[in-house]
Length: 237
Length: 287
Image (tube, rainbow over the protein chains, first blue to last red):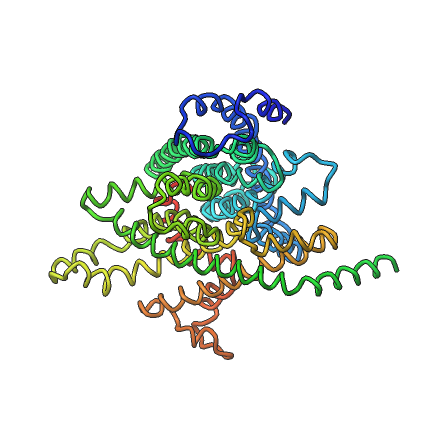
């Protein structure tokens, strides 16, 4: 997280440069592009990938817990999940950031995104598990499989298949939410664009526009791919 | 005793700050209602365009939807705050400079077009889910386009799209929290940060903040479920709101009531909504 301080020194732009001048400065855009891409890979992608992994695993755990726990506990887990899902991720980020000051902001961000999206994904998993035909459950009883084997070998493999596209959509959604990390000062791409580059040079135009283009360039093809995957999985049924 | 004393101080701070917190809450509610209204208009307009057979309507709608959906909400906000005024700086004669300088308005517009683009997908998907026979029947009766939309297609699509729109509205409420970063928008999250200083973080953000947002989201959800129950009743597919809310429900009510009032994720509720969920995932793209 230190290289952005370097950036302010490296950039040969005086801090008091007025915002007039060329409306779009290609040289300046070219100069900040490497730093923006670095921030993109270092923070935006990192949070998205690790957050999605946490969400995918934890979401499945939540979905299974709600189905296997005795009723009062299941009810508790479900409402805690609902509570996390129906409250703003920004407030959650600020809360955990100030509550656990000894953890660094990036870790907090990854945990909050992972847990928040786990509550969404648990709903997807639940729908997937419910779509497993009743006959499959009956067959496991008939074969006197134990619970662990039933879940691991029969239910989860069938449930997962139909959930993959929705999980992908939530991963894209998380990707587009990562700039919320601005609220706790993680210098991901948008924070870099506005806080560091804009804040030191007073040129916001190029940085913010490049950030938007990078988001479009990354999220649109992924969305198209997931749509195709979804159609293919739908036909295969 | 220390703990009690601390709580007493927190409550004191809460009452000292209550005016500002309520102002912030009102700002958040305004953002949610105005942003939601704009999002709805955008969603219906773009959704109808994206579902139209003509490429001249479909093409621009698709570009706008993918653009406003693919760009992140925060990027959109920053772009509107920092880049849009440059057009006015370059030519000072352009009218409406006050509008681009109004950060609250920028918040409403950014929320509206971002979530409206998501909503457009829900509208389009629910239009295609209305059964083919209904479309054919309107053609057979040679209904005009406004007539068939208003009387036949949209009322059926409306019942289908409401669950997705309800989800998106809750998303918009939660998304409105980020608008606090704009100068001059003192919404609930902004005022929570003021409350944080005299109290501790768990009191301000967890107890006051998250619980308030949760209650707001529950109110939105229940309101939208009531709308959905009403839409279904009008199509002759369920009990009326009066029947659902009556203290001694008739024989059919338990099933229907549980699907509409037991809010979030009861098994019956989600089964009843299964078809729209499916339409949302097939047409929904990235959300």
